[in-house]
Length: 254
Image 1: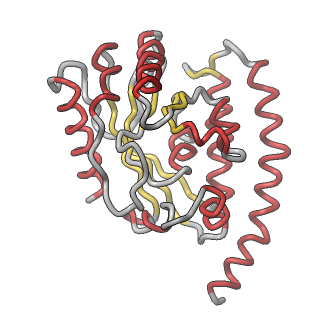
Image 2: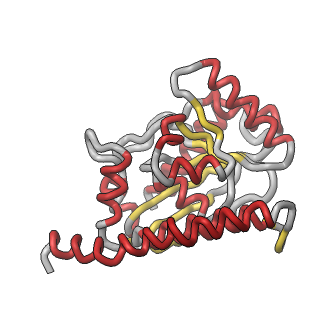
């Protein structure tokens, strides 16, 4: 089967799957979330489990077979990951509920932005010092209350070809709260072979990437929860940022 025909065939069955996931599964999740408020099963809040289940379902719709390596930390922790595309949030949420720090533009994205707002996302106006101060304040409050947060310290996507420098200031919340930082490596395709496929192409917006990925061949999505950086293990936020990046780069090279 040639590539255009194969892509058309994948749209033929994935579009109805996506419609069902949005029009049936999503309302069910939103209905159950307030009803399950405060309930805990096996140490996990039920509403968090519902978000994870919906995110895992969305990854299946896009043809991703999830593989998890390592164990996410329980309780208060900062999870930091390399950033490839919008689907990173869904990949991580399929494995561990965390309140993400994400650019404010995501609020306006169809489906993903709406769901992100209900998954405890902290929205940040990039380039705004005032916004960053508010984000750090919110992160610190959550961590001190025993909750987790997730950040992409590169500050944006880079086409999937490299992992950029990690902005150290975002790690200030983990230092002041005295919580561990757990690096997470996200790899798409066997051995990370599809990083550039999943990433935004030059000039490609959210909708273009969304539609293109919906027609891509099925592939694995690996989520590697790496060795955590314990409070006091590295001196200062800059060294924590460097160490987290080093561990992610090492995992990507395996």
